[in-house]
Length: 574
Image (cartoon, rainbow, N blue to C red):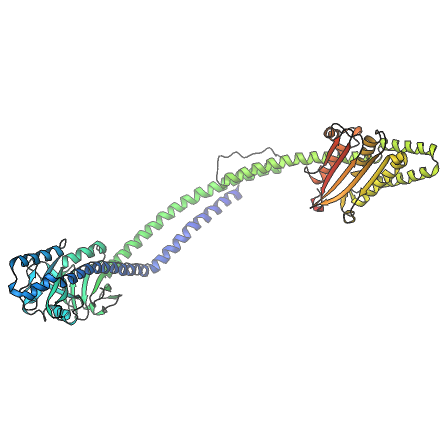
């Protein structure tokens, strides 16, 4: 009982350690590396978020840039700016209609301006800032100057002013308007509101960055999408000096994690910041949750280890008890279980095993009895009274008719037969020895029957040494002589042919005797009239298995053919 209980506890502690040890190691690892892992996670999320925010704003800027380019090429706008104050009222209405239709859907997100180089006339979807009209080439951080230097391009500039609607302008797109001769006569300006950029960013940011900044590193200008008080130069946010133009990067400074990415293809970047105290707060929360999780897992592991250990040890004890009964000789024991898992399969295999052992023991006992019976019959066949009677009758007949020489031959061959059956106690001899025994028997019968019996024996040289059961061929030859040729009027012939077929040896014994009507019944009959056909058939099956034996083909008045097949491999012998 102690041993079985000990096995249960061994299982219990094994399952407990298997479940707890990985959790403990994981918790230790987490405690040692959680800060680094969490920082790495925030780094990855920061980089991915700033990249997605930049991509979304880039996508919208590309649409606005295309709009500005289309308007800068509009012939109606070019003609209007060339005409100056002489433009009539209908043309002016058409121009305004063009502006408003171009910005349809974004009227609350941006303002569109057509600025004449001479200041008037200028057109807009909102009130035009005075500094756009008064000194266009030098205002707004040089946006008109940039557009003049690169007339083929649409330039982007960081802006920061409050329009008449109370909207803060964060970015401005500008493209020069030129005549066919290439003379610059004005500019198309698209002011993008900070509120719209905040909406685009919030769809992706979702509160991850506490500060989301538009940064112009070359001019040390910044526009905070969430905190307008930070707008202006870098004096409020000195850590922005670490932002590199036209690059993507991440650094930690002033208790912040700053991730930035450049807009395409200008020197303005978008930067997002995460306060490190937020990271540490999340780390503390994560550590506490991990400890609670470990405690709950420990309790669950103990309960599960008890249940699993019991579910395994109890069936094992039942199996050991049943095996002890089998060991004591009780082969009727069976384990009844509704389980369908591996334990249930093990019980089922145990039941099958005991059943097969029980069946095998019965079959073994039966085969042993049959083998002993066959051996006794084979020994009796060595001195078969019927065979001795026929032989003595031949000696008697010949002694009267032909004299002492034939009697000497008969006695010599008879001596060979008796020596082969009596002196050799082995169950197997060679095929050559078996054939010699057959020849001795046929020599005696030829003296008795004379030319009435013709014989033909074919044995390949390479098969003579093959192992073969003793006293198999002689009873079959004797059956062909006594029951096939002797009753027949006139002569007959016996043919014994040995051949190899694949991995088997085939032996055919055919005679031209009177034949039989029921060959199968003759093989199954165990009487003296069949001269041991049943005995030979069963012995072959006992030696080589149930797939082997003799096969009889016979027709009444035409003769009989007996075929037997044995395996070539000697290790096949049972």
